[in-house]
Amino acid sequence: MVADLEHHFSNKSIELQGKTYQVKENLSQIKGLPSVETAFTPPLYIVVSDEHELQTLSQYYSQLPAVEQKHQLYYDVSGSPAHRDDFIKGVNEANFNDNGFVSANRFDMANEIKTLYGGFFFLGLFFAITFILGTGLIIYYKQVSEGRADRNQFAILQEVGLSRAEILATIRSQVGLLFTLPIVMAVSHLGFALPLIRKILLSFHLSTDAVLLKATAATVTVTVILYYLIFRQTSRAYFREATRPE
Image (cartoon, rainbow, N blue to C red):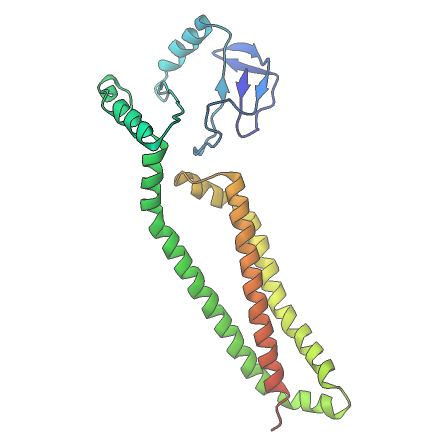
């Protein structure tokens, strides 16, 4: 049996050590095994038929210079937080490290991740707010200056019979195009950059496709809403300046 958590492997056979093995079943997940992989090269889990095949393959691959053999044991802990902490403490005090074993638990790792990446989250949020406000102010005052420059043209349009509602619709169409094109291009660029973003998150051990897609959708939604609010204020300012009498 073969387990590919990334769903890239679909072959009916696999060749190892010059021997071809038939794949009886291709599993998408294994109960008890973490479903999230944080490696640049996704692993492929292979379950052989018996202990002899396992030993044969282990001996072969242990002789390769770039291969390191590891034995991993995953466990679930249930019960109260106090029982959980006692169990983890007992594992850590069992001197497994002296025998080449390394123990880790999700609770200590979660605290370390929050401590390490909390600063990155704050910096990202701070720069995002700063850039959005800066962009909004630049666009706002640019439209105000252009509204003053276009005042004579709109005065002529009013003299030939265009109503204020028609002028406002024209302004919204013009300013809307100015706002729509950057949003479309930004979303397109983000779509092409998603694979690279996923690789960067992998290096921080912070990647799940579901979380990445949700975060991307939330980012795009918030950006579009903020741009829409800026668009409303900018179109009103442009209209006010363009239709103001000399």
